[in-house]
Image: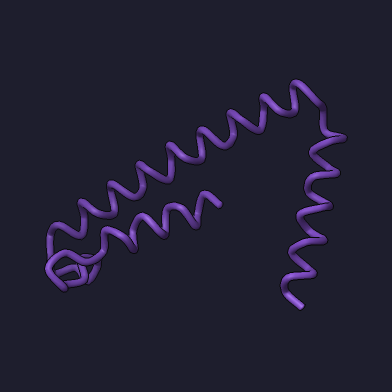
Length: 79
């Protein structure tokens, strides 16, 4: 999810005035990469912090059930 969020942020900021910013000719593309990197880092940090809090409160057993359930749902959707 974090990667998807970062990629979505990059895609959302990728066009200003119809010109792609990541092509290297536009120096503002560097700014976009920096912004999306910072956003991805903050999002990942928050996700890890929440995960550790959940594991601390409930243990790995419930996390395991959650992952199995998400895996089954994913497999059913991908059919």
